[in-house]
Length: 167
Image (cartoon, rainbow, N blue to C red):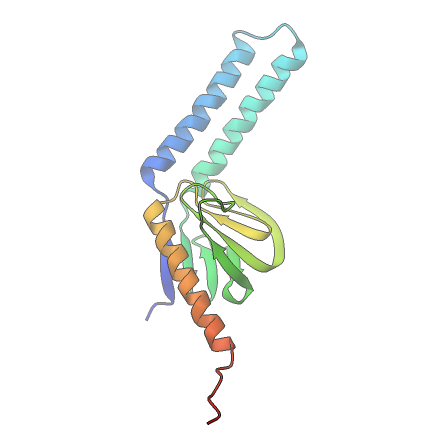
């Protein structure tokens, strides 16, 4: 029997759109810096650096969006083998309208902070928060959040001693 509870893949249309927007932005910034440069050399350099940084971000996102995210009984890991969080470290899942979360995703709140990490378009981790989503499938992200919340409820029930009626 597989230990895998849910898998979150990257949505192909969202990936294409996100990469297209980043590449268009990079092209426009570089075009303005080279063809219609501002008179000030500082602004020209700023636009060129920003355009190159956007290209680097686009390439990082292209590579990152080949990964999938997996929820197992042990915790959250991606298909590259990076561990986002172990199940025993997770405090709760936040997925409400006003939660600080990526587009079409959810946030996982940890009991303790972990090192900063970012996989563009899929997940990020800052301190005690892990944001999952971005170019991922909304349906799969919602399902993963629901399954994770259910697993956390089961875990908390198992850890809490049951009261017995002393009659």
